[in-house]
Amino acid sequence: MLDLASREIVLRLLVEALAAANTGYLRLHPEAPWLYASGVSYAEDDDEREGWTDLSETLARGVGDCKDLVAWRLAELRVREREAALPLVSFARRGHHVKFHVVVRRADGRIECPSRELGMP
Image (tube, rainbow, N blue to C red; front, side, top):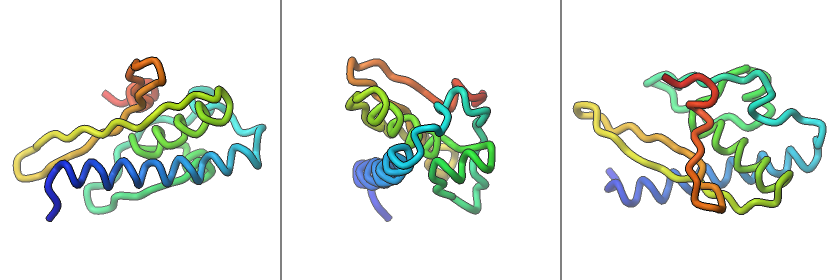
């Protein structure tokens, strides 16, 4: 089992990998909608399945969790606005489980939560 600091690094790198895939998709498909205009909403993954969906799959499903939405938002900020935004991972304990949440740290330091923007309570 990894400690929280190591988990944070691994999750951040995985989100970056998904954002890189989405960046490639946006370069090939400039007509793709912006995340907030796409009609996609937030939905948490099942506890039994932690899925990682790229932009095209998230768009087709119509829902994404925090990591899927952040990876899409990072890609569009980087490709369409040339902004060097970064993922920010946090953890919370729920009993014996540790849950994580990912948000976007904008280049100017603002924190943006696509999940909240798209329906997370």
